[in-house]
Structures are given as C-alpha cells and as structure tokens.
Length: 600
Image 1: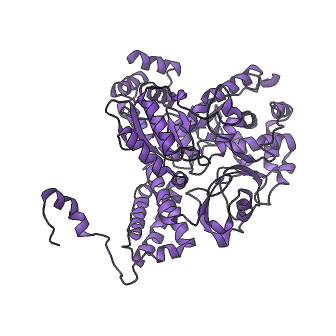
Image 2: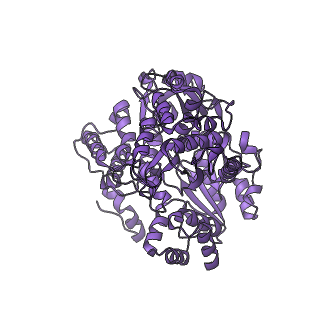
Image 3: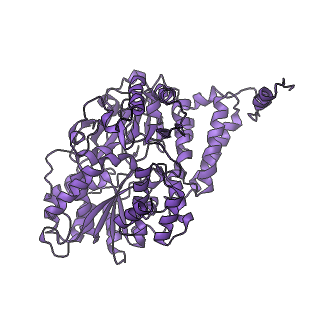
C-alpha cells in the first residue's frame, strides 16, 4: 500500500495541489481511502491528517470505508423517479440482499444513491465502476446482479450496442446516447479545427477581447456575466501567471448538454480555451470535469495529445512567439456546489469545494491566488464561432439582451428528450412543440433546474432569455400524472440539503426547516401559518454566500407562487396551530418493543 500511494503522489509531481487526483486514483484502485493512506499522504505533503481527511469527507465519490468490488451508484433525480427508478432500486436491493448505503458481507458489491449523473435523457441510469448504464429496468438489473455474482468484468455486462457518435469509439465504448435533436450555429458540423487559433495569431489580444465584447455574449452558466468584460478584467489584473478554467461540472439536475459537447465537440471547446488564454495572457488551462463523466477521460486526453502534436497546444503555438498555452483535465469527485466558480477553484487546489468570500473575484485572485477566468463549456464553444464569424454576426442572433444561441437539455414527459440548440427568444410553447410534448397533458415546466422556476400553463408563452426566463439550460417537462409537491419539489429540496457545503448557517439549516415544513403539509398537518413561514424563511436564504444557498428554497417558493392551490388543498382550514407532533406515532416503536399499550 505504501509503495502504491507514494507512486501515485510522485505521478502528480508531489504537488499537494494535485491532491484530488491522488485521492481519486487511490479510491479507484482500492475502493476506498484508508486511514493509513491518509496518514501517508499527509506526511508526504507536509500537511495535517485532518486537512487530508476533510477533503476526503467532502466528496460523494470518495470514501473512508470500502465501497465494494462493484460500486453501484443509482441516480435519484426527479426525472429518474418519473421514469421508473423505484422498481429499479427495489430490484437492486432484493437481488443483492442489501439496502442503499450498504456493502454485501463478502465485500463484492456496494449500493449507493447519488444525485443526477447527467443522464436525464435516458433514465433510470447508474454508474458501476465508472461505467454508465442507461434505461435500466428491473429485468436488466437482475442480469447485472447475476453478472456481479459471477464475477464478470463490468465491461462484459453490457447487452446492447454502444451509443452513437464517439460513444462507439475504442476510447469510450459507452452505451450512452448523445440525443442531439437540433443543431445550430455553434454545434454545426463544418467546424475546422485550428482555424480560429490561426486567425487570432494575426490579431492582438485586445482585438480578440474587443470582438467578444462586440458580440454581447453573456456567460452561459446562468448568471449571465458578459464574457468579454470578464476577460478584460483578467487581462488587466496584476499577476505573475494567469489561468483559464473551463467549468464542466454540470451538476444541476436535468442538465446534460456539457456531456454531449465533451463527447462530440471537445475540439471546439479546447479551441475556445486557447482563444481565451491568448486574450488574457494565460499559459495554462484546466478543464474541471464532474466525476460522473470519468468514462470520457481517455477520449479527452487523446484529443489533447493530438492537439499538442500539431502545435495547437504547447510552446509558441503555430509559430507565434510567446504564445504558450496548454490544457489539463481535472476531475471533481461529486459535489454540486463545485459548479460555483470559487468552489471549483478550491476543489482544483485539493481542498473542500467551499465557495470563497468575494471580493476579491477569481479574475483578480483565483487559482493559486492568480488572476483566473472561469467560463463554462458552452461559453467557450461559442467564443470560437464569434472569432470565426465576427461579433456582429453573433449579435444578429437572438434578442437585444440575449444574443446568440442557447443549448437546452430537455427531459421529462416528452417524446424526444435531448439536447437542442436554439436561438434565444423561443417561447416555452415553442419548446414543447419541438420536443413532442402533448400540451394537453403538460402541467408544468421546470426551467433552469431546481434553482430555477417551476412555471404553469398560463406562462408557457414566456420567452427564454435574460430579459424574461433566464436558464442555464435545463428544462424538465412535468405531466399532469405527476404529484408536483411529492415528486418534484420534495426531491429538489432533498437535493439541495444533500449538496450544501454547510459553510453558511442559512444554507445549512433553513432548507432542512423548509423541507420539514413541506413534509408536515404533505402529511395533512399543515396550517396557514406554515405557508407564511415558508415565505419568510425563504428570504433568509438570500444571505447565503453562494448561489446554491441563495436559491435552495426556490423549489418551494416557486411552487408556492405558481401552484398555490396544491398547498391550499392540503392545509387544515379549521386550525390555526398544529405542531405536527403525534404522540401515538412517537411512542409506537417503544410500545411495540416493550409490549405495552399506550395510554394517550
């Protein structure tokens, strides 16, 4: 064990900032990270064991206890539940003889729940030893569990053909489907690798930034900060070295567009990073990829290496003196909060993914306290098209406030879930027509994932764009057969509670109180004061440090606003107070254990 740990540390240059890589590799090799491994890592890096342990304990896919030879992580997102996850989960438990969170007595298999894994267009889905299994059924689960008991390699457990596009390649071999339903100006197939890089070598960095500013492009991660302005701030910031980060940590339930780009258009993404690096004067780029997409690692590394071979990466790119830039992949280990840019940087430095206090912003002090640009996958892909076609061309697409195109991840109750590239300005009604949703059967649409808004039928004429319905890209269509409060809102609240970093007392406490209050209402013990409490408690969350905490109450607040009747019909009209406490229920277990009949 000691020799293996030391070898792993040396593989990453004995650099303590590569702690995440070391931990992930040890986890994969051994199925857990032992106390002995933690102690050795701490000694090698000159850190305290507590510092190493707090990083290990923060991430979902790192464990200090064995997770089994076959580690099974079943997605528990709202869409997975809509598509039949309950029967799949029950079959896993029955066939393996364990409950979620447990490992079989022989250590063969561990069964765990996990948040959305970026497969909402092909649910129910699971990860088994970094292999993705999609469209699971109880019968399929029985086959998988049989293969586990027989000791088969996970790669031998697939009974269907590989997915489309690069999913079929020797470096991926995945059953995942891309489900690209609509291609627009950014995803179009005629992109010629290296053309934009060649063009910028004839431009000044300031001219590149000016072209991006001219396009009025706003970041595609949801906040919508102007991309060119962010680059300009970073270029003008003082620092010995500058960095470009690509945020590929799409953890918002219902979002999967980055998965498709990483699979089918990674060259476009990497070219966008090179352009950003040239513009701000950065020499290093880091793609922070969510752990759930680990199955794409060989594919991405192969493309980066081929780019180096033709000098699209490396020293003096395409003969331009002083134009040095390279890219590396940094995997996360399962934490939604790392989608926040400063938490992402903390994680990439080998720490807990806790958001930083701001200011200073990353463009001033980011990775290693140096000026850092953080853009998401879609933004960097769009940059390439801006350089090739001009800022005015890009600005001609979309609306005045929302220029260009938007990639949408659409899932739920529709015929054609998948990725759609549309020009900003589409209405929700247009989207429903496009994806084959029967409007007569649609009750609601969740726009922007759990942190967004759930809208009702009288709002389906609203326009997607920063001036009306802003979205990072996730739309979940919810049919009339669904119980919105139980199936959607409660699931989203559980998600936020699970994913909170716990740093802010507001985010650590208030979502749990709101979830408990919702459960009280669902259990028919709610009163009108409970609805007032939910409104007031939601305001407290605005004091949280980051966007996760600030929007953690949105599932309840949004549904309260747009579906008040669902709450009204469940509260008690003849009571002004109900604590929700039932003494009979409270003593039921103790009475059963002692054989007493409660006298209450």
